[in-house]
Amino acid sequence: MSTKLIHRYLAINIFIVIIAIILFSCKDKPNPVQSADSPEIYKITPDSINTGNNLLTITGKNFGIKQYKVNFNGDTSNIFKTWTDTLITLTVPIRALSGNVSVTNSSGTSNGVYLKILNENQVYVISISPINVLPNDTVTVTGIHFGNTQGKVESNKNKEKIVLWTDTLVKFIYSGLSGENIIIYNSFNYFYGFYLKEIRSPQISLIAPSKFSPGMIISIYGQNFDSSRAGSTVEFNDLKATDYLYWGTNMIKVRVPDNVTSGFLTIRKPRISGNKIEYEILTTPVIDNITPQLANIGDKIIIRGKNFGNTSSSVLINWRPSTIVTWSDNLIEALIPDSCTCGDVYVISSDSAFSNPFEYKLSSCASRAEFNKLNRVRIENVGGIIDTTYKIINDTIKIFYYKPGSVSPDDGFNWTIDIYLVLKSGSLNLKHFQVGFSRFTSCSQFTCYNRYLIEGIDIPLNSFSTSKFTYIIDNQYPEKFIRATTESGGIDFDPKQGQYFYITHGVYNLNNMAPIIITFY
Image (cartoon, rainbow, N blue to C red; front, top):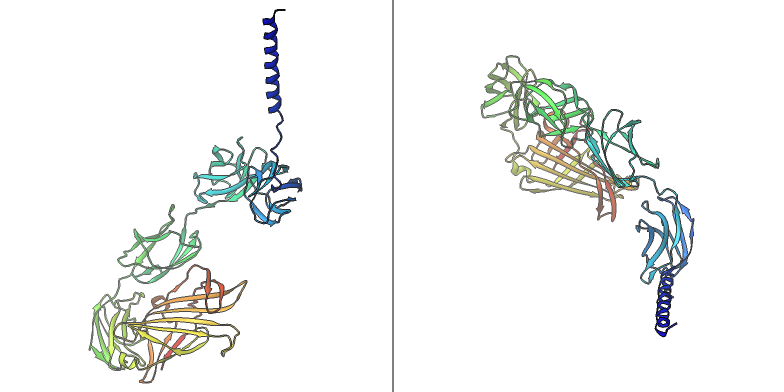
């Protein structure tokens, strides 16, 4: 063999050896050597587990005392119960899949230890839109583990029509045929159930009264009104009401708006309307003038106007019934009743329609100057009896009272009361009455707070002298001058108590309301 041929064979053999060394070095390359401070896992307990609330225990070393993260196959979100230098316990996240688990801290990442996820195909729903649905609405469900192979969506074993299916997103058509309980299954037959709320048409069965005038409060009875208004409206023909006193599933109380005409009433939800029920608007009495312009108790006054009707009914002077002398459609003679004070006069027709308020003064009216001489107030039937001072700012009387738990009557709890009385300009009649009552009594884990807001028009002054005068607020005409309002609850902080408390708001019970007696002296 020639020298040249020998050199060629040697070169080929050397090339083969080099290629073999390269291939061998790339095969089964071990993990890089960990530093002495790197975390190391000894053991995982258990070695197979369901995701969710089940705890996984990891033992080892160099985990550190500061929480970092535990890496699962498919998820790194961690909810730790314990983290020490040698022990970690945590909840396995729902997105985790079977595979290696490792620990990461500032020094690096540990070795991986295999963990078997027993329910790695379990369906989890993250969001549903919309929740409130009508038949034929498209519902979008986001989540995990739906699978890339289409499963099924059922409602009481009725299959809903699927329009899109991915591992994290499902869209289907809500049929409304078999109920609102929905179950979504993946191809592994794992499932997740949820509830849709079908928007149902409001159905009115009764309006009370069926004849009314603008400004009156009516009650609407029926079903499917929903527990809160949430954008729904009561409509008189095409005129929407704006003043809602109560909204419940089967009953609504609403004030009749101005400029309403006879026709049909309906309840309209944001996406669906209900049936219509006929109503009749009463002719509203109108007071044009009253003579004489000033009178005393027992004097006769003449009320002129229109639409009083030809059937005698009633006249209220500052909410006190007067004695009727004569009555016609455009003229009424009435006597000023005993214990009457300055205030508005109303004519109420025989079909219960209220007139416009006409302000009227008596010779014995108390003056604002005399009222300003008083400096204390006593309030009864609002969380007990309160006797305190008050301030007058413009036309608003502001009262704030704080009672420590050791003060008589000792119920063992501190409570406060905020009261705002707004006087009608130029008179002593109340225009608004607002009460904030806080009693720090135990209520589950928190204390309870109740606030009542009441509006009034011409709440009568029952007695007056240079040394005192008294308001009595009762429910004689609650539909005209008392309105209860609720507000949403929440958590608040009371600096006097130095603690947090839960706010619950209640409605003043107008039917069983004890008279609130307010005496200034």
